[in-house]
Length: 367
Image (cartoon, rainbow, N blue to C red; front, side):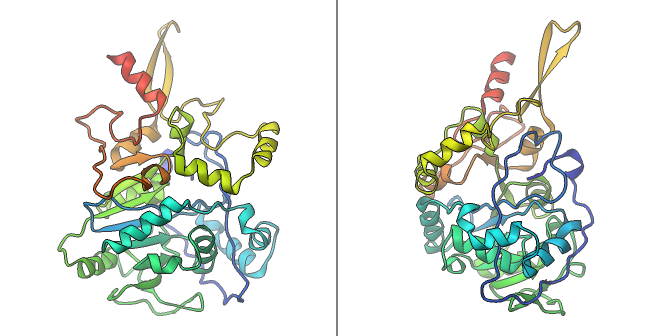
């Protein structure tokens, strides 16, 4: 996930061509890369994708799962060629052993997704990854039957343009053997698996599927540029941001996450990583400090002032709430009422299960 002020607003994207037909065994998947200083110095060049699968609070009619890759669109052609032709080292190694790079979702997350489906909610999966790439990942983290969980799957969505562009600029396309049809669809009239697309046509489909003139949508994602800002500003959707940095500031991991990690990552393997000095992806940066609060020296340097970082400000502005991972809410009742960010409430309101330490300390110093 890349975060910088320049990425707050959607920009023009270069569409990559449709993938070539793949063989039965051709699939790929990413791993979760640590981020040392995400708020001020985002990584350059292609980054491995991250994938988020999340359920929906009971009061809403639809839920959207963001499966958001961190690959610059200018590099998509190279990624496509590497994936289909087994070029390079990354994609072939992931195809051979996806378990080395991917951690399956916990049973609690899978159960919640099934419960949402059984409760009559409309589940969406929107990703900027291509269909074959998405398929391998979802089969590994959710199971071979993952398609049964979702009413609508949209791949190669090219976010944030999915939300900001008009239908004529980004029509939906059908897929045949993971290859996009050349003609765009004039509208979206039924559930299914589609490529590219736009928010207005999806909105019309949701109105038909839910029977509501203004269906309520909760959208889960981990990118401010591709997920939170466009979904909130253009789609007017409720947004839940996945902020793993919360776990680096006092928010404990959920029991479901701990149990799941213990099953897929032996202790001896974890110990080897710690011996090599590798940091947790959620750990506070030694160089930049807290992801949420900046400390400034004022005057002669004797006094300190604490200010919200740009990223923290955007979380409060464009997100309905923030959680460190889906596991933290997966075991809650479907009608659980979550606290929401609001300019009329303290800046610590809206984080679940609790605010990060730096925000709590800031509030204490101001009281």
